Amino acid sequence: MKSPAFDYIRAESPQHAFELLAKHGDDARVIAGGQTLLATLNMRLSQPALLVDIAGFDAWRGIAVEGSVLRIGALTRHSEVESSPVVAKHAPMLTQAAPHIGHRAIRNLGTFGGAIAYADPAAEWPACAVALDATLVIAGAAGERRVKAADFFQGLYTTAMQPGELLKACEIPVKADGVRQDVDQRCLRPGAARPGGRRCRT
Image (cartoon, rainbow, N blue to C red; front, side, top):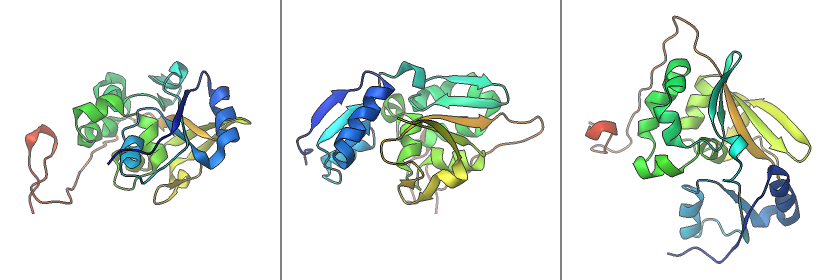
């Protein structure tokens, strides 16, 4: 199946994106990596009149320790999180979870913030964000606000973001000495492939 027709605008800045979202309302959808949105378009589960591309916001990508938190920009690719020595040191749960996300092509294109904002209960990053007591940085035309991950996710594919707002970054407390983080991924289908070619068992 092919996606419905839509217009496309590459936002020049966050302010430009906020203006477009305010103008077009529910007829607009935001795209960055597009690994989730494009699939829903092709299945006609989403039929926006306009796609607003925010992939060019370089200031919204990157990984850095700022004081006592590890800050990951929303436009950082999954693969960047997976390979980052900074993440491995300060939030190893993310390093362990990353290989379970789709396959290499998806991890090379999909964004950390996109997966969180979509709020799929089966996705890795939302669960990790809650487990690590992360804070989500939300940006809008009126400025920024911060919401704890436990309060950000409100239901299936539902978050605390208001219309016209965008997820800018995720802030995670750096791992304290002596604290251990582990990921135990359970497969829904017997025989499904796991990272490294291993297979799930019943």
